Amino acid sequence: DAGVTQSPTHLIKTRGQHVTLRCSPISGHKSVSWYQQVLGQGPQFIFQYYEKEERGRGNFPDRFSARQFPNYSSELNVNALLLGDSALYLCASSLEEGYGDEKLFFGSGTQLSVL
Amino acid sequence: AQSVSQHNHHVILSEAASLELGCNYSYGGTVNLFWYVQYPGQHLQLLLKYFSGDPLVKGIKGFEAEFIKSKFSFNLRKPSVQWSDTAEYFCAVNAGPGGGADGLTFGKGTHLIIQP
Image 1 (spheres, rainbow over the protein chains, first blue to last red):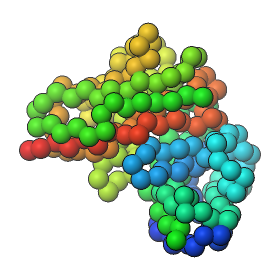
Image 2 (cartoon, rainbow over the protein chains, first blue to last red):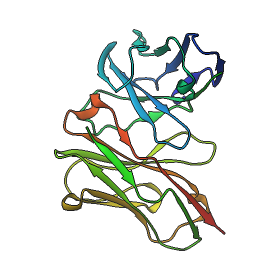
Image 3 (spheres, rainbow over the protein chains, first blue to last red):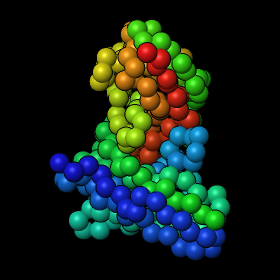
Image 4 (cartoon, one colour):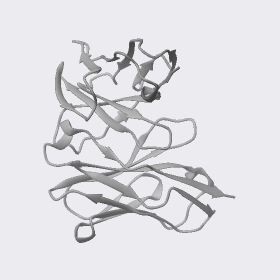
């Protein structure tokens, strides 16, 4: 079975531009979460989506947005890119939105560099 | 808001040595606790988790962790490490039950190197 797939794997943008990152969850998984991992830090929660609805949001500015499609795939959009947005963006899927104890399956991430 | 502190950022051990990686969290309510591991060139994967019941939980590859509520700790242990345990280890927490929508709060990670 395919795992969580993310595209693209690497991306270079300049300040002020917009970026769209894509994620396909494991087949049958209905929940998708997005995390930002800056070099030397642990992943930081950005969004969780379940059944196409935003269920949770981390402490990120409104420049960050996301959506989930009927096939449960998801996009993360970042507007007006800043140098500080340079990071590895991770997508994770899980079977359901449960009690918080569910296992997350992570993708390999998209490495975004903002110049 | 929760926070997670991992005490050791870099640990170097020889094969067959015993391992203990520290993890403390700050949150006053019920928590779910996790250890995730990232092997070189691979994605993050779950090592073990605690959400209720026996505070000593066993995970894959011989790892275990003990939840000590009074100390707000969830330390990871392995009695005898192998070269293949070389990886980055992350402790994570969320509020439970129902805390899944708030996402996981991760520590900064511990880079473990096992020397043959």
